[in-house]
Image 1 (cartoon, rainbow, N blue to C red):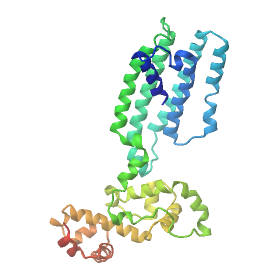
Image 2 (cartoon, one colour):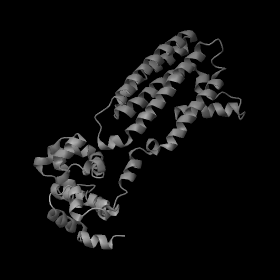
Image 3 (tube, rainbow, N blue to C red):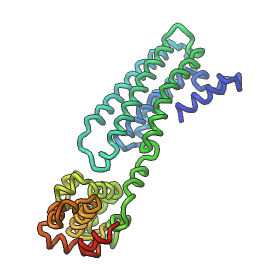
Length: 330
């Protein structure tokens, strides 16, 4: 909003719709101090994924002080030097946040889904932020009148923002966030959707209340992680999904998963594990696995210990035997 509003108001003047000065920076250059912490807080929220409104307000103490000084002390050169120190200091803080993002290695399944997109987005934003810091300080310390050259600054910097806009629309997760991923994840078969419930299936027992209170604020994210895990072929084709193995993959405590299965899953952990295996077997059948392999081989590939347990579970969850499914499948 800050970036767009500045250029929109400047565009009104440049296109000749008005001769009045609308741009806040043309009215008082010291207002640029407010823009710097906004950029920093953007990166902070993107990378740390949390915010404290009161702590964020503290970042605007210096800008407010500078503007008040500017009202009573007409010495722009002092303000330009302060802006240089202020903007460079904040940019180094942004670099440290970016380093934290790039080196991040403890990722959940959900985070892995959009990590590369977010990292690229953050690097692009950091690059543009760097160029804007250089560009803005150049105009302040150049021999030209900064007030008269804001039009040039807006023109060239707008090209940088155009690159960002194109990237945003080519990567909808940036615009729509988690909702875009949720929509993709929920493009499942009806059977897959019925595994999990959005709300607790029964009253929370007192012995589980403490763990449930810890899990509840992030339950949507954990359920999404589990759903992505149960569709991850490289994982479900090599390990059986139990609360222990899932806890290792999702990097969350096992007792958290025990509570989640107890109150949000329509199946027991054992039935859930077998259902995931059967869904994997069905996908193999649809991809022509049985054209070159036997049913016994299909059961082994789906991690069942015997053909009997495979056949029993297949009929339990699909409703028909493997041979009947083959003849009726499209």
